[in-house]
Image (tube, rainbow, N blue to C red; front, side, top):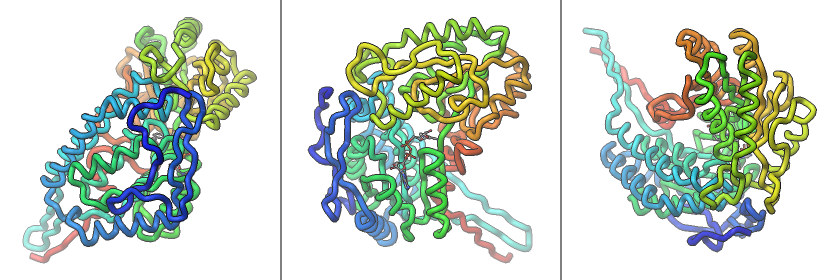
Length: 485
Ligand code: NAD
């Protein structure tokens, strides 16, 4: 087992109504670290009784407490303090996140700053927010009265867990909701930082509640709880579909950020150096465990051979190793179960394409979760490795002959999260962007976010968008009040 960073608790508890508590029935589950797959902590395994307690605490804080009624400026002050406290935890958070998720430490270091920025951003937004007043002169005035929906259930995945939870917590709290957060069972560690940070910043007890546990137990109880009117979920598309079905009898508000199999399209007129740098980063950063990974690279045939050769050489030179090591570029995948899934796709890929780099566990490393960056070329768009989300350091490359074929290949999967286009032809770039089935498109660039813009996918990649005022709209009711003049 790798070195355990300072400050890892002996046990991970729920946080309900301002207190750290075990599960009502005392149940726990084992949490593994990814380097040695050793159990490093036991976490409280929440069940229906724990979710019930957490929802009751959140409801009390929402209906009897001040939080939903604070002036925007007052809530914004608290959120800004959260941001400062998160930022102050930067090095510690990076160490915990790397230890728990296997992300390279160099990439984990940015997570606190991004999480803090999410809080600052929504603090600014609620202060600047305005709603419509519409007049029919001499007849009627209508204004929009906005109020928080109530208790929000937040269910998060194991990749970049702290940052992704901040992307839900910040707008939910900014809007005035109370929340119950259910973090992913593979990586529950960094969520244990929230109770202290939020309390110290001035979030009243009961407004934030945390229930650990398995998806089909704690998560499911939250999904079906009648006093949780809205759910924000990030995770796999199959889980999203199940949650939507289970929430349907309660007619809950749903925001679903789901899986992806995003194309990176490289035309022959592109700046090939920049395209290679970016597509490598796009699929191998964060261990390839990234929802917006450009995991299908489509390359115009004229530059296909050159691209494949240069890309594969760079992929083969990527440093795989201990996530805590500063030189590491790809760390350990999150969990043996996930590694087994990624390796099974690599086996499938061997018969569906031409292996150019990697092809299995990274050589020379002890630890079952080290997977070599793997590149398959000549993969047809019907292949499983082309159409299914692998969520690891595996990429497929496919040639195309013209714009129409590139577009058809890009749209040939059920997902529609992101797309990346590399070309120096302005018209082609924008035409392609407007036709590709993706919620977000980056032209000659990658993955830099602007928090004001809509974030989310179409098709099987999501329902609803987050980001900017869209997030605040999700967590609030907008009531139209009509007055006769
Ligand atoms: P997952 O769907 O297995 O789990 C996500 C969360 O849902 C976990 O907390 C889990 O415990 C919970 N869960 C599982 N079953 C549940 C159920 N029946 N009811 C309620 N909750 C349940 O996803 P994962 O493996 O943790 O994460 C990886 C996936 O997340 C990938 O598909 C990735 O693309 C996606 N993702 C999407 C985005 C985005 O913004 N679109 C961002 C990050 C990750």
